[in-house]
Image (cartoon, rainbow, N blue to C red; front, side, top):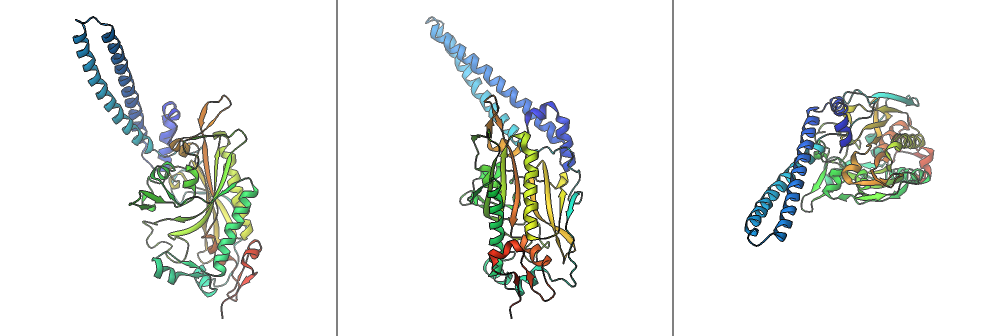
Length: 419
């Protein structure tokens, strides 16, 4: 949720953020009205409770002949208090709904616009010159790394088996990411992949993209699409100690996405699938530390991409393409030879205090006063990276060179077609 102090003091900044996202700026006025109505309802209920308390004291001190009238007055006040408290509950409910409807306020400098309005910040490496490149599906199947046919037989479309060296490649990626994270002060966690509704909602995934999330109705639980969700909930309803610096975690988990509305898009191969593995960095910090932590996460992503030796670019995502929780997001996109374009491998988002406010994650400032923490997240490795590795490192004879950093995990420098 957004900061109410900002809303009250500078509603135009929130309206501008909504417009930049392509979202409804009138929601700001609805929230302002709901905020005013809630405060008025709280004040009215408080005043009536004070009157009721004073009336009760009068009854206790009154002479016997005065008590019947005072008791009637107290009874009438009790009815008014009940009505006022009901009004307050309705006002609180309307206020919460209005508050939850507004996305995080973007950071100054975020490009306006939609999916195609990103800004390229950096380009690293030259795309390889490959005559008649094979795509990752053809390479993966000929090398015995990916079995899409049996994945579909067992689970349906957009499922797959990673087999042999394909499984070792993925495990190697995850190990590299876990080691890089722990070497840089992150605590490695293997989190649960089923979470309660309040945690899924608290991270902002039950808004515009709720249809992407798998829900287990019988248990009222959700399968996570990223370990960002359980990591964000890890310190929910806590006051954490940030006096020695940010709390940094890395979550290694399987992830699940329905990919609703993406029919016909990236249906071939393992670019857009229902289940994949990922190592995700997550940070809790003081708000003033968030931008530096964002750069830190981006630099770790750059280190990981250097280890798999693929060309990539860094882009600043436009406001209209941000998730509701993100105030700014950078993507690293790797070159995909068969598509002759760059495709996303990593994202890192600065969510400022938006998620922590929903999840009530706080820290104490230098005066001991509780304050809302900031949260950030960033991909450090995921199954999709195999696409970039296979296509960029393919050789004319159909083999694939294994990046040096992954050789110890795979046990081979080159993967050759099965004869």
